Length: 96
Image 1 (spheres, rainbow, N blue to C red):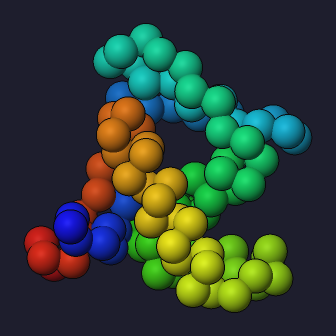
Image 2 (cartoon, rainbow, N blue to C red; image 1 turned 60 degrees about the horizontal axis):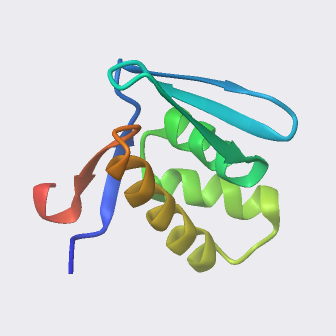
Image 3 (cartoon, one colour; image 1 turned 30 degrees about the horizontal axis):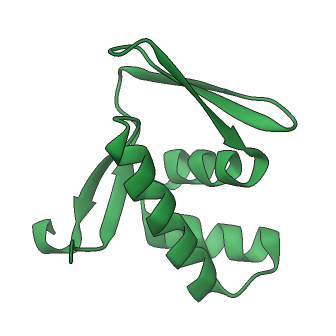
């Protein structure tokens, strides 16, 4: 089982723009666009601003009024998915 992501960073080759119903993310290296729903888009922006999965989870739990443990699980799943597509770089707990 892979280590849990601890820190997240949006690489320089990724640009994004938030709209009311979705966030569009472009990987400039592949030329592929990716659409994130409003919730995933908000999580993406929170990760960008905080850089830390834990710090983003704390902010989002308050915003969404959802238990922090649930937000952490959802954020970690999103991080892995984004990293698989080259849209996010992760440092895991073993690397810290």
